[in-house]
Structures are given as C-alpha cells and as structure tokens.
Picture 1: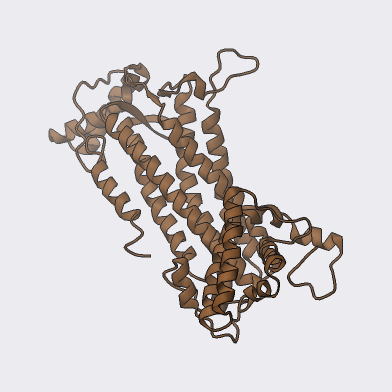
Picture 2: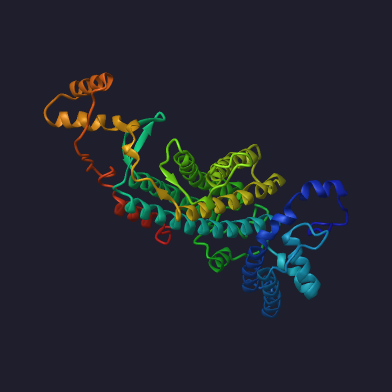
Length: 433
C-alpha cells in the first residue's frame, strides 16, 4: 500500500487491512475539505517563504482541478492508497513532481485530519441547523392552526387533564429551541482552527496560524498545540451530544405518533400512502415511518456514549483509536439528517381528529377544572378535591363549565410568538461564536 509515512519498510497485508479499516470509503466525505485546507495551508507557506509565488499558483491550480473532480463525482482513491491525504498528495506529485512534495511542510496528518473533520462537521452542523428551523416552523404552524382543538393529556399512561393539539405541537417546537442551544455549543467547539498544531507539539517553522484561520473562516484558533490534538474526539462527542438532544425530541414525537395513530386512540392519521401494510392482515395501516424514526433516534442517542468510551483511557497525543470515530459519527449524521427530513415531510400530511373528547372515556378529564371552579367560589382546595373525588367514585361527576387556561404556556395562552423569538435568538450564531 502507498503511504506517506513509508520509509522503506512496508507493513504486512494483514496489518494494513486491520489498521486502515473503512478509512478509504469514509475519507471520501472529507475530500473537498482536505483540498480546501491544503489551499489555505499553501497560501500561508508562501507568505512565510516556504513556497514561491509561482509554486503557490501551480499548486493552487492543481488543487482546484482536484476540487472540480470531487464536485463532479469523479474523484476516487486509487487501489493501494491509504487515505484521502495520501491520494491528494500523490496526485499532486504525479502531476507536478517536486513541487507536490512541498505541500506537507509544517503540518502532520494529525492536524490535517483534525482540520478536515472540523470543516466537515461545521458544514454538517449548519445543515442540521437549517433542518431544525424548517421542522420548527411546521410545528409552530400546526400549533397555531390547531390551538382550539382539545385532546386528552396523559400522565402514567392514564387520561389526566385536558390538553390541545396546539399545546402538543408547540411543545415539540419549543423543545427544538433547547436542541438548537446544544447544536450551537457543538458548533462553537468545532469552529476553531487546529491547523499548525502538527502532531500535537507544533514545529519550528514560523507558521501564521491566524492567517489560515482567517482564510478558512474560523473565528479563533485551538491555540495550545496539545489542546488542539485533544479536541479530536471532543468535537465529535459534542456533535453527537447535540444530535442526541435532537434525537430525543424526535423520539418522543415519533412515539406519540405511533400511539396516537392506533385506532384505540385515533387522535391522528396519515394518508394510506404514508403507512405500510401487513402480509397477512389486509386492514393494517402501520406507522412504520415513525417506528423507524423512533428506532433510529435511539441509535443516534447511543453515539455519544460510544464516542466517549472510545476516547477514554488514552493519554494526550494522537492514537490510532481515533480513526474509529468516523465509523461512529459519519453514519450517525446520516441517520440524523434522514430523521429530520422524514419528520418534516410527514408533518405536511398529518390529519387531526377534532372530536376526541366526545368519547365518554374522557369524561373525567375535567375533574381539576371542577375543583378549581369550586376553589374560586371559596371552597378550600382540599375540601373541593375530596368532594369531586367522591362524586367520581359515585359515578355522579359532571362538568359543564368552560375551560379557563390563561397563564403563559397553557392551552389558552400558547406563547408561540415568544417561542419564535427564543428560536430566532438561539439560531442567530453570528452574534456570539
């Protein structure tokens, strides 16, 4: 296998196969970021005299050709090439000869892959931000549209108090605000420049790290070279933690939908084309989409723990264990994107049952309303509670009053406008990076 670190002694085929793993396939996701990082690096090398202006122009033109191939889907790793960094450097050397060998001055594959991953995660996180905002908008719209349609609220899986579809949809919208805070935190960890930390201890070249940070759009450096290397794994774990929060929101919503689609509940339904059937029972309309969202989100939530376990027990500095992070994180990101996309898609077709509370099963939902009505008339709360409880036991409870929920966040005062402001502030990442 062709390796950048080969000094004349090759590993056995068994060792190469075991240590390289899935890198060749996973590294293709990093291809454009590796080129982008290399272009910034050589501009800096020219500025400190390690490349001539002509060499910079020659290398930049060659890297642009590689970037164009990547954009067109024509880029692959040659058979026997270890990783994306090797492939790009070998292509440059094959085309440009000695000039291609100069591109690696002042960096290590350690800070090179760190940079690639941070650039990749930055784009992925920004994509997640966009998806969350789209889903948030749909949930808020559904909340406003259905704010007057009542539904039962449950505690301990028992009918408890009156709720509304407006409150239900709005709850998941506001939950996404908290998820956006977490995503921004991950973005801030990711959005720092590790390039120039080399193998974790810097080097003797007078590297202008601020210059590469500016070119690549990083607001600051990972300053300490050791700390920069220790961000490997932490950036991935923070991203996984943020996705875990998003996944928990979607998991609960999917679980609700699975339950509410059941004919025993009948709260919501979807067109037949968005459900699946049974191979034996012709009447079935299964909530497979939401079951898959629920299951995939469980897998997403597990990623943070898997990453934290992988990154523990290692002293500072680079270790090959870190290579396995891509095996965990890259598929998790794909799961997260797909769950957000399909959830947003399904909400376009959700149908609401507006007559749920006509079912006598929910006749006791208004016991608290009756207790509160009597308290407002001067009855002590515990006496009113006991009176209503006894009426329920005798089968004599009736409630024919009106619901008066006016406090912020209740079914009569959803505060969707305030929640929208919270999301606007949470999603404005330009104010504080």
